[in-house]
Picture 1 (cartoon, one colour):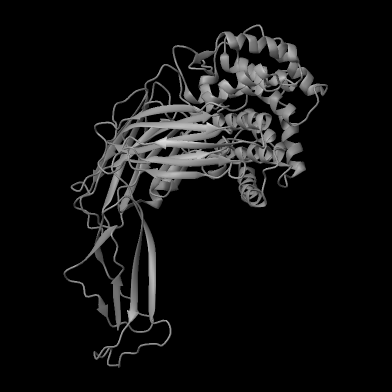
Picture 2 (cartoon, rainbow, N blue to C red):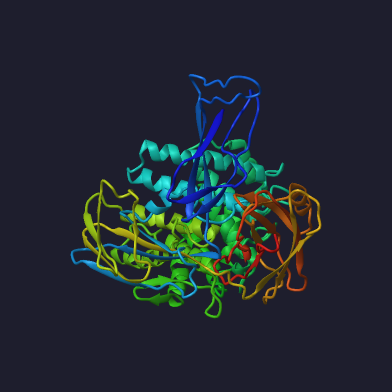
Length: 626
């Protein structure tokens, strides 16, 4: 006789069903299913526990006396259930790098939730670290809350580990525990990246088709630095290097194979110059000599292109490339021009591609290249460091809640630049006290010193609205972040991208599991001829899962590069969208579990390299439709 009992919890209630008995005879190799109606009362991951116990009974089971074993008479199973608020999650982050030198430094921030915030979804946290790379170190496995299905995105998981490890090693802060954790990420990332390698040594975006010059250079420069931490097959490196060199034209510039990842990199100079600067910088980071014929010819190509400085991104990349090559005269000329077009506000410094249109990821990457070029002088003067610190403080303000930035390339280059800056200014002395005052008057104290620089000090706060004040006293830098998370009703206003969702339900179907067919029409309305890579993120209705056969058909669709399923999301990668033709995705979803008061699910479409531009979402599903 088996009695089944759920554990009590304040996070949810389990209500017995009217026609279900929760004790039953169970014979050897038999099975029995028990059900409850579950109602969660909080958001987040809930642990649900249920115990089954063999108990004494005078009831005969299958004409036999009930047996109670001495061992194994009780079993408890715990499963986790993720409960999320309806609507779309938003995160507002506020970052400061405060380095007092005698006098206390203060900052204030006024928080205000939107009027349409989903009730109960708001939460706020405060983190304090003594190192600007500490937040990224704490989130090495997820600097971006974005999918990682293509070859370049995988490198964005791998590369930050390298720069952080180099910084910690160069400053004597690398512990065995950190080394072990980071090298595991490096090794798994290296093995994954080999899936995107072609037989000729080139790397392609999805591991098929023509090699991509830009991606192959990105992989080479990262693998070259990773060699000092993990084993990298030298034969594979040499094969990729040979392939890359074979793409050099007779004038020294490199041929474009594959797409530039972010089409906002295009501008006044040819894409070929931008690509050549990137490839040349990669080769110089691989410790290839400027006298190497391949490098010498590519530098000659770039030298002939410095008369046209209309593209800010390319100019910043050229400044860094010539700095690596040791051509300080050209570097100085480029930096002088960049300084005249810099954007200065409140002691902070950054660069934008144009005044009429901004791209957060490209602004971060451009500014990071200027920082790398600025830090390449030897020795660095006090004014050099002061100039660099203004860029650093702007970059820190752009960080997300996990230590990354908007997208992949900007995260990689920005962390490389921040690591170099941190190495240049590293000090073994100093300590500071951080005092945070909440709107309701509560004070929170944090201490930062050389023994806990990398310690991730986090505190959940109560007040999600009102004015917070931060004060740092002492002689050590403190990196402070306030992260406000909340949900809002799903926005549906279309900008340059739109998506229309049409659900079709056969209510007369005799199938035991109801099926919904979703037709998603994706369209681009912008000024460019085509978009960058597009992600369509489809969240499942609660209790539903994608039909495996339908997923297979979707993977075979034109323009679909890859389809991933992660948690309760289906992620579809589209090569691009054109301004002339819409593209339709069809997917079947099947109900696995009945859910009462079903909330709408969200479909979101966005340009992977402009994820924080306004992007439309659509909701689908209701208790009636399902």
